[in-house]
Amino acid sequence: MAEGSILIVDDEYGVRSGIRTILEMEGYEVAEAADGASALAALDERDYDVALLDYRLPDTDGLSLLQTMKQRGCEAMICMITAYANIDTAIAATRQGVDFFLPKPFSPDDLEGVIVTLLRHKKARTEAERLRAEHEASLLALAEEKTQTHSLVSSLRDAVLVVNRDGDVVLANPPMLELLELGEGEALMRPAQELLGGGALATLGEQLAAPAKDRTVRQLEIGEQAWMTSIVTFRDDDGEARGRILTLSDISEVRRLAMEKQKFIRTMVHELKSPLGSIKGLLEVVTDKSLGEDLDQYLPMIARADHRIDNLVELIRDLLTLARSEQAPEAEEAELVPVAPVLDEVAELARERGGQRGVEVITDLAEDLPPALIRPDDLQLVLSNLVGNAVKYNRDGGTVTIRGAVVDGWLRLDVADTGIGIREENLARLWDEFFREKRAETRELEGNGLGLSIVKRLVERAGGRLEAASVEGEGSTFSVLLPA
Amino acid sequence: MTTPTTVLFVDDDRDFLQSKQLYLEARGYRVLTVESPDAAMALLERETPAIIFLDLMMEHVDDGFRLGYRIGKDERLSHIPLVMLSGVAAETGTRFDGEAGGLREWSRLARFLDKPVTGKQVLAVIEELAVVTPDGEPAAV
Image 1 (cartoon, rainbow over the protein chains, first blue to last red):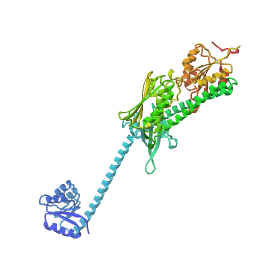
Image 2 (image 1 turned 90 degrees about the vertical axis):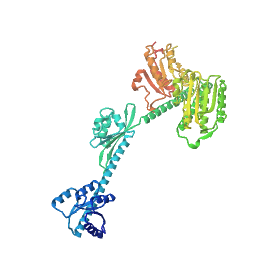
Image 3 (image 1 turned 60 degrees about the horizontal axis):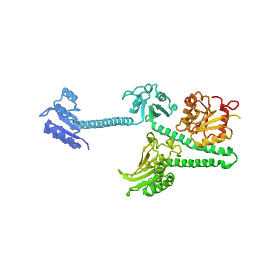
Image 4 (image 1 turned 45 degrees about the vertical axis):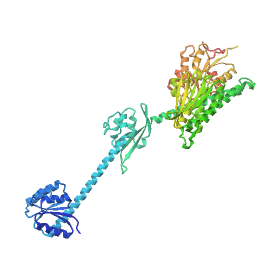
């Protein structure tokens, strides 16, 4: 069974029905129109594979109808049929897009042959059209992918420069343009070597041109910023090198942290070695018998050495606490801890210590104070550190007041003293590890400068914050704010 | 009887000062100790020690260098050898030996000793560097 739909446009009923009979016998789908208007109406209804047009129609001629049909987007193959065939009409018809010219009269075999050929052409044309559309779609997708890649690279924080095989820039994202001090588009297709120039980036230009084995990941400093640079070759699917990609990652923050750690270690070493040196010196006096044979003479020195060892042990314990406080807490470690019992214990210890100097410790907790969500040990450490400091840095006969209440949705614990206070310029440095305010008033007071660093980290680890306010010579207030 | 050689220690660690004082006094030295650069400058107005040991990190990280500079600028004191003591050295990768950036020259540093420093080491440095006249008198005034 043949497949295809055919529209017959002819004003002669006999011709139409004859053709219809022949084609329907072959299995084609057939429709008829007696004039131009009904032909167009039929085409509005549906598409046909082939249209057979009579050259002469009552309301128009075949060629005019053909033009209207084409204008309306008709994609049917066109076969002109006419009894008035001459070579001029044939040429004119072909020029106007007629696919075949069938002169009347024609045999059923002639008609069938024409229809088969036209349907084959139609099929080839449809296939070609489909392929073209597909190709167009893939080109569109490719363009879109290119745009996507471009915006992806543009939004990277890293500075990226892509060069082709000749070393010319094919892509420079905004951070790279900023580094090169160029506007958008100013880098394109210019030699990378020239753009990287003679300044801080010059070595990169050399690296970019160097063979892969001579390239290294390196660190580069430009102004205040530190960058880590790397160069990779990019290849197509066949493994062919297409160009190189230079990436500069901003590692300023990483470097700052590394330097801070360096400084911390340096200070830590100093804080460990100094007392060891002193202990060694004290013991040397004993072994040297610098004060003669009477051992009693040395007892104060041995006691001092012993005390310095205690301080060292405490320092090491605090260093461990500090390290621990940097780790994220295990969720299950936090508990709802009632504040009063912990505070009572801490206050009692502070009273013992402050008693001799007449320092009074007062606690004033709101009756409905909710429990704090924190590791119980951490709360104990926080309060004992703050209350301990409040006693230590107080004046003789001074007061330490600990208040607890819910303020603005926070569980707020204030530890206020009437001591020597803190200089305003030092308030911001209070939390720095090993920081101690060096003043005549603190000369006789021992401490390793880690307490407040630990307190701050423990409070923040519990989701809270720590604040300090102070007036030099009048006293300080430390406030712990925990989520209520 | 000869006048004992005077040695000055500037350090904020009292135990360190005391131990060095006792160790050296047992060997006939006269030992002066102060705990801050300012106290050192005050003392140096009336004393001219034969050698000065300075702690590098006191109140500020570079107090030792600053004090060295102040002493060096004083004509009456500039001949006194200065020995810097510090617990911060090679192991941290930081050069505090005063070679870097001309600090050594700037602060007229004669020697750098890494803490902990024993009495024995101090003694050896004094014997080598202290400005002592043949009869034990301090060299210059």
